[in-house]
Image (cartoon, rainbow, N blue to C red; front, side, top):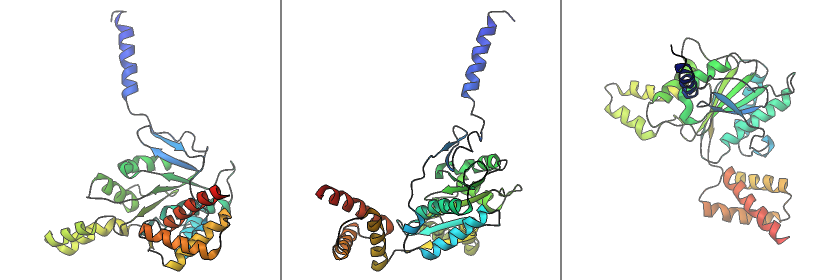
Length: 289
């Protein structure tokens, strides 16, 4: 090899190294209690402060709150726990409940030797589910405990993301790591459009088998929590709770009347609508003072 070729080959090798995908790493996993999985970078991006509301402010979902918190506390204490699916009406606090239970479980169980919580909340995007096996292999060797959280989960067809999730939840020879749980939220009970399931039933040679295949993914969540549109009294309870935290100077009669009017313009009553109303009211009262 001529000496002139050495620098050229070194530059080619450096360029190829830069183009190759990064090796997944747990570097910095002790730095925070919440992360976002970034598969393209092969790393966990720390989230210094999780956007959420305290558990005490989530109204109208008492049963769901108690079950999910108990499951999360079991996991934090090293006891058996189930993967959880939170499904139902939009805006009723599904994702807020996951984040609030994570914070509450860490508060109740206390920190570890490093001062961090016992559980890490790790968010994965819907479009990155195909990288779940890679992520779980990475987490398996960690000493920390992880709740892998996917918000607004749904599928339009049985793509590779569907099959990857189905495999890691209850299949595969390696199984789910003992230090990992999977929590997901969805507006759909069975994660797929109803018309897709019905179409499979109508065209399949064996309709019952086709339907069973479509709902088998949701069946792999041990804990199912349904969220339904709230009644007016529950909606007003939510509004009163938020108003009390903000210390808003307004009579209960006016607060309720304005909250009901706001919900009519939105065409629904939910925790999200209640929060949006309080945000608007807080700004209005702040300008008037």
